[in-house]
Structures are given as structure tokens and as C-alpha cells.
Amino acid sequence: MKDELIVVAGGGGFIGGHLVASLLQRGFTRVRSVDIKPFDQWYQTFDQADNRLLDLRQKKACEEACKDAYEVYNLAADMGGMGFIENNNTHMLQAAKQAKVEHFFYASSACVYNADKQVSEDVVALKEEDAYPGMPEDGYGWEKLFSERMCRHFTEDFGLYTRVARFHNVYGPHGTWDGGREKAPAAICRKIITAKSRGKHEIDIWGTGKQTRSFMWIDDCIKGIDLIMHNEVPEPINLGSNELVTINQLVDIVEQIANISLKRSYQLDAPKGVNGRNSDNTLIKQYLGWEPDTKLCDGMAKTYAWIHEQHAAKHLNQVS
Image (cartoon, rainbow, N blue to C red; front, side, top):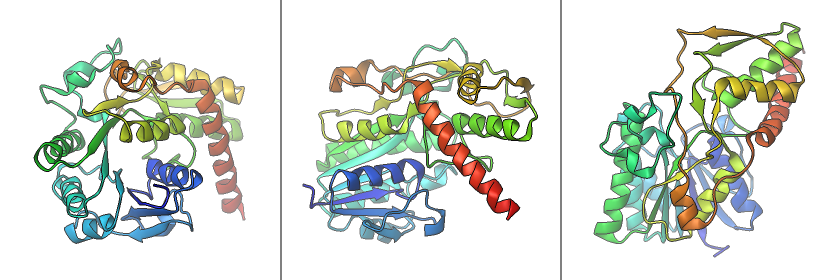
């Protein structure tokens, strides 16, 4: 199988880049990495891979991406929401069916879950069944839920082998860490690094800081993708850590890593997302005998070190 063609759609993204790296490190000799972004905007690139710029909103591009593939991992996503539905995963499923792909993986999201289950910080961990009745996040959440259903129908109607994982807040090196689109772990690392470098011991926190989340280390995510793809997991399944923390506790962790204590200013009018979200891992342990288990403090230490390097390099370039 190491000589079969493996396709990673969204290979220029954060998780996609790590997946391509893992496949190459494990000895796969034919890895096709596909993304719409220019190469200089890819999070990671590898000369050993067949790197292609393709717009997967176009059916012909999906057919080119899937041609001769043995496995397809569809991690491509557009945060714009509903306009992407029929022009991405459906076309990718059709192209995979046409190319007689053996295995098809779809990266879904915890955003599919019913919003009524996420209004309290004292959250009850989300079970897979909590996606129905459907009331996910508008746009992106509906896109993901619709695409999950399409995977199911392509399996039932055409016999296409599909696997679906609902990602919960993935973090780690080689991700977005500034510019406004970064997630909480990276944003807090950057803010604390900046505060420390400037000698201004203050930090702005969006919301009350009481919002609860779980965060999954990138290596656990990649391992989970592989296990779910190659085992009997016939239904959409959570892929996330169940180590629940408040945003305040996340700041505590990074302050300890940085050996600093900051005055906190809460921006109550800033976007804060849902009040509480956690992953119920009962089903993944039942199917796989495994769950993401990297401690948040350990993953955050590695993430902080990487962002610290990026921050220093950016500052050096600005000075020069």
C-alpha cells in the first residue's frame, strides 16, 4: 500500500500539512497534496509530494485531484459556509466514486452540534447523537452536517467506503498564530509572548474567560485520522480531547510556561463563540480502544516554543 496514491485535499492547510508530513515520514511514496492557495501561502510544503493548485469548487478539479487515487482525505474547507457545499465535498465524492477510490475520509467539525447543547460553561460533553435534531452553527456547521449526510448516502447508494471524523479544536505548530484568524491556544501564546517582549504585563481576553473548551494536540489528530480511516467506524465520530478547560485556565497554563503573570482585561463585547463545548469520547474508545490523550500543558509548551520562534523571526525581519 505504501506505493498507492494517497490524496490530501486541503494539503496546504494546518491539519492537511501535518497529514502530508506524516504520510511521507511513514514511507508513502506517492502523496498528492492539493490546495487552492498559492504555494507561498501553504502552511507546509514538501518536495517529495505531488503538490497541485486546484480549485475544488470545480468538478473537473476534483476529478484531477482524485485520478488514480487509492485513498482520499478531504480536509479542504471554506469558512464561508453554505456556498461551498455542493462545490466541494459532493464533487469530491463523485470524483472518488468515478476514480474507484478505495477509502474516502471527510473532515467534519464539532460545529455540526446542536447550538442548544453549547449555551452553558458547565457543559455536558457532546455525544455524536447530539448533532440531531439539526441546529448547528449557521453556514459552516450546516455545510459540515450536509457533507456528513452525503458521505453516508454515497456509502449506502454506491458502496463507497467513507469515514467521517468531527474535529474538536486542533492546535499545534505550523498553524496560524497572528492576523486575526488564529484559534485560542495560538492567540494566547502570541499575546503572552508579545506582552513579555514589550515589558507590558497585560493581556486582553475575549469574553469573560469562563468559556469552556477542549483542545486536541495535532499529533493526536493525525493518529486519530489514520485509525478511523482504517478501522470499522461506520458513523461520524468525535475526534477531540475531553480535557475541559476554561479560557482563564488556558491562560494560566501559558503563563506558567512563560514564567510570567499578567493583568487580565476582559473584552466582553468581543466575539467569544459558544459558551461551552467538549468532546464525549465514549464512542471512539468503544470503536478503537483509544482517544486523544496528550495533556494540554505538554502540547501547549511545544506550541508556545514554536510561536516564540516565529514571533522572534518576524520581529527580526521587521527590524532589518
